[in-house]
Image (tube, rainbow, N blue to C red; front, side, top):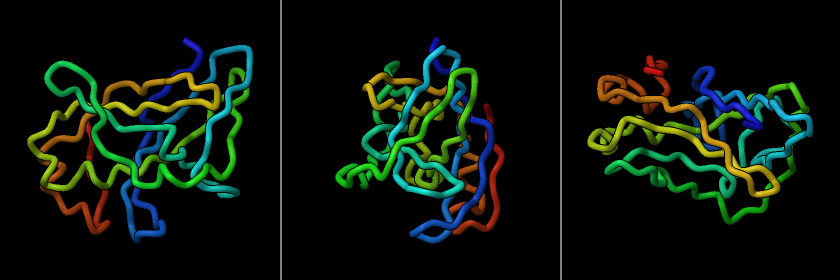
Length: 149
């Protein structure tokens, strides 16, 4: 495995759309070469992957499928971030839509796929959002919810 991807936290952050609930994913490069990932945003302390290079998937009917369409995929990536060998980098993925009540009947097994600039895909460990979390005060950024990992 060249890179380990895991959910390391979650937090409400302000963005262009107001308050959004972000999953914080740690990408740990276990290889001897640097890896590069396209970014949605430029010089900032919060790296967000470019929409065309990541997707949220759920385990529906026993197979992994795209869960949430990313609307910004038509914009060009701003820049790329380097993950040095034997180092890690945090990426922030907007997961607000996973908490809307309309997603209650969908699978609660999720994973995030990141694609590097070479086109290699890396999948996070499976994480879950429970129905109780979705019913909580979540969409307006009132409070962060507990996740099962």
